[in-house]
Image 1 (tube, rainbow, N blue to C red):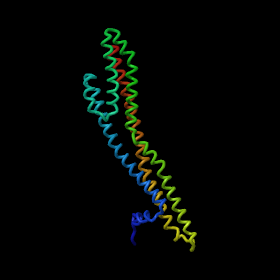
Image 2: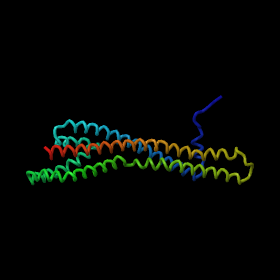
Image 3: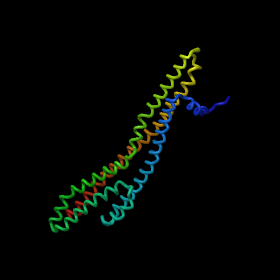
Image 4: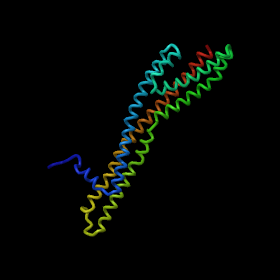
Amino acid sequence: METTLVNPNAFEMALGTGPVVKGVLIILIACSVLSWTVIFAKIFTFRQARRESDSFLDLFWNAKSLESIFAESKGFQSSPVSNVFRSGYLEFQKLAAKGQEAGGDKASNMIGSGLENVQRALRKAATTEMLRLEKAVPYLATIASVAPFIGLFGTVWGIMDSFQGLSTGGPATLQRVAPGISEALIATAVGLAAAIPAVVAYNQYVNRMKGFRAEVDSFASDFTNILKRNYLNG
């Protein structure tokens, strides 16, 4: 008794479908290709961001001065934390320059009142970094939501064609409609094959982005406290 785990005629069955079902299969294959392209691209993006953020934070908490941190931060362009630091530091440098021109107590007061600008720069940079990490991820959510319904549409259309074929005459037997129904069900299978990896990857990436957001917000708060402690109360 011979058994097979994979239907060797699946490809031929797909080729035997009607034009509408063929169009549905082409759309679903394109969605699957796009989905896997985004999945692999974001794997690299998140791994690079994680690795560089860990390295930058180690540098930040062990460096002697903000100037040295800023100089070395240029080597961590993929790190959200590093990019947020650079935006906040550049804004602080503008305040410090104005404070030096004012001199004395006016400098401290100017920096203190200008810390709100630093915080605003940090928030803006954090938003920009989250948008960068999020880029293309919504495509996964769209594919996960739409692909099963596109596949179901192809299946329903194929089944309709199969039953309409009975109107040409002859006995209405299962043997006559089964091949058409089998071909139509391929659309549902391909739709699920496109949707399942997309929804799994989307949920994983959303959780990672939440982790980066929490890390960036925590760093922005720590950075602001360091500026207050070293430049206002020192």
